[in-house]
Length: 143
Image (cartoon, rainbow, N blue to C red; front, side):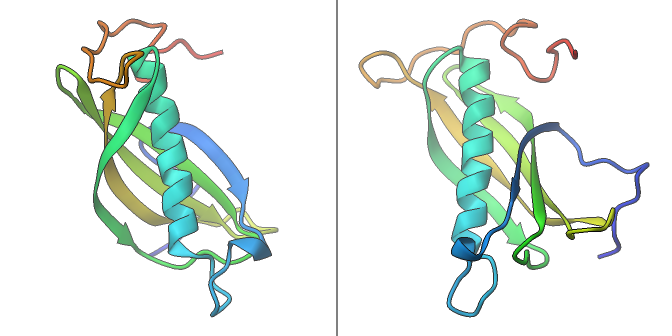
């Protein structure tokens, strides 16, 4: 996959940026896919909680595809985009991009769809509130 240019940015809202560290590797020395999925879930969870105005829980992860490896020292950036809203649930498309240390070259390394359900104080599903500028990353004002 060719590196992304400065004029091509990932779809969605930038949600998490982190550096892959040696403790994030598997026995072969590559960054562990489970670590990447956990970062994706954290990013999607942040977007879900923001949109739900409260607690939201992961109920499904679908279509995760690993396109290329991440190595120690890479800057990992995760972008989220709400793609579907139901009465109590929402689906968030998550893309993970890497930037090799000391370069401007970026490339998409994985993507997938994370489904969340909004929860009430008893951990039961509750309706999503109406979308507003204060709870929707897609229409939130930029600073």
